[in-house]
Amino acid sequence: MSQNATSLQQRRLIVVMGPAGAGKSAVGSAVARLLGVRFIEGDEFHPPENIAKIRAGMGLTNEERRPWIRSIGEAVRALDDPVAVLACSALNWKIRAMMKEEIPADLRFFLLDVPEAELRRRLATRQGHFAGPALLQSQLAAMDRAEEARRVDGTRPVAAIAREIAALAEA
Ligand SMILES: Nc1ncnc2c1ncn2[C@@H]1O[C@H](COP(=O)(O)OP(=O)(O)O)[C@@H](O)[C@H]1O
Ligand SMILES: O=C(O)[C@H](O)[C@@H](O)[C@H](O)[C@H](O)COP(=O)(O)O
Image: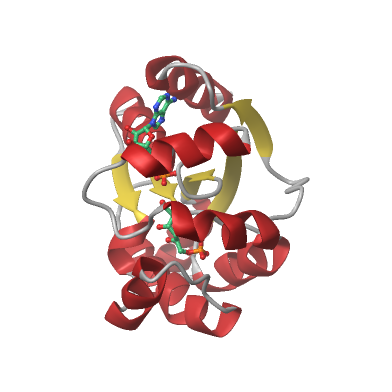
């Protein structure tokens, strides 16, 4: 096995997941700061047609998710770092399976658990993001129980959630 292939297999990616409004970006970037590693914002990798659809409040199909997840995989492949943090909704097992195919890293999933009413409240007040409250229903419908993910209480302050995930990820 080449050195490069070995390092790809050994790379660990902490995936902060959950529906829109769960706090993936806020918590994920805080986890990365705590660990001193790079933060990858999954939403930056959508092709323009996905952004237009999400902006219109429509959920994506898995076919539409594939190029997005593939671009995230390319960004991860380009990293030299042994550990990084990714914010990505990863709503159900089909999407997580796609992630495992496309992203060359050991994926560790952390699901931010936030009740629907709080998600709705956050999305109604969030500024400067293409996903609004109209997307929430399709997000919740697409979500599964994510048995493979470690669930964390996402209703606490960002710093407390980030400390918990950082500690779990290092254990
Ligand atoms: N733990 C939290 N407590 C209160 N507000 C939060 C928390 N996490 C995130 N927020 C706020 O909720 C909104 C959605 O957070 P964001 O990180 O964009 O979620 P996501 O990336 O999962 O869509 C933002 O306005 C953010 O500041
Ligand atoms: O942070 C958010 O508000 C959401 O995650 C949002 O950006 C969107 O849900 C996904 O990027 C689209 O992909 P999915 O339909 O797979 O969640």
